[in-house]
Image (cartoon, rainbow, N blue to C red; front, side):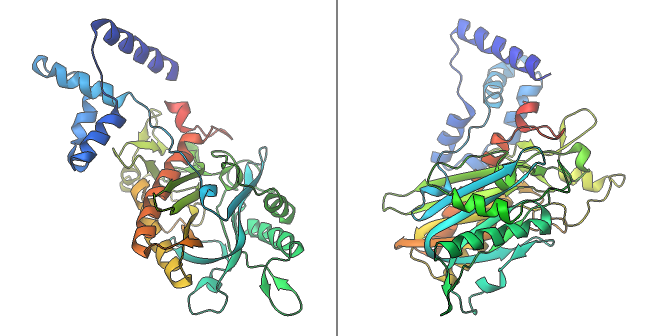
Length: 393
């Protein structure tokens, strides 16, 4: 089906070239409308016209709509390691379909957290409350394996202790390693989960190399669109993105997308990955919820977990506010989000070096996290019998 679609598209493009038509890509079109402040006003029907035959008098508009709807989304550039002081290490078991991602900080950094999902699996999040004493963390772990996967953080802790990094307690150091997990036991092997050995290895290989995305690290066994059960799900994954401002401020994000809901392209509302109907096409989650015949979604079997980071001079209180604001990046891309079946958790790190307001850092974190979520879907590959975005396009 995918090959037929591509061949049909190629034929259309060749015909347009012969006629000398000049098509406009969807991305360029949206950029132009955004400059005019009209992006939000583009009618959804404009994109729907490509799938229906318009009246003779509307053929010109239909041709434009067809051109807009046949251009696939592109991945955003940059990754979280563009933020000074941030390194990333990842290890995965491609047979068991699980893994962990470790965000290593070159020096202790302020960190906040905000948990919005109702079924979280976390470690050391209470410590990040502004009223508590410890002000800096040494690393953050995102991992698969459900609550079992929290064991990976102990391996990271052991590695950090060997490097002499951690909170000084007089007789040694205690590395501060917050962590969050996703539930990926429904795919691959439920008996193999990230452990201390995997966490230690991930921390030891952390580097400034651009972050690998898709079926890697904590995103190895991630899936989305489970509102109608795993049999109708699609592949999630790990994504990252970053932005740099002229004043030197860098904001980055890394996320493991394992949501019960679908993932949409923020600019158009197009569903990139979600629950598939009997015809193989994606149905929106709301329609599944309205359908009383759909099976219930087990609580805690989903979750999107992320880290947003910047080189802003922020304290622990401010980092917590950034983490809170960053959840809007999930709201822009995942529908529904923060459900009873998700444990959505976001950490916010500030490595320091550039003066920037909380409002600016938080707002940029929203945009970068949304880009990272989309990247995760676009980079994912089908695995464990679960198809990916590219398998359906």
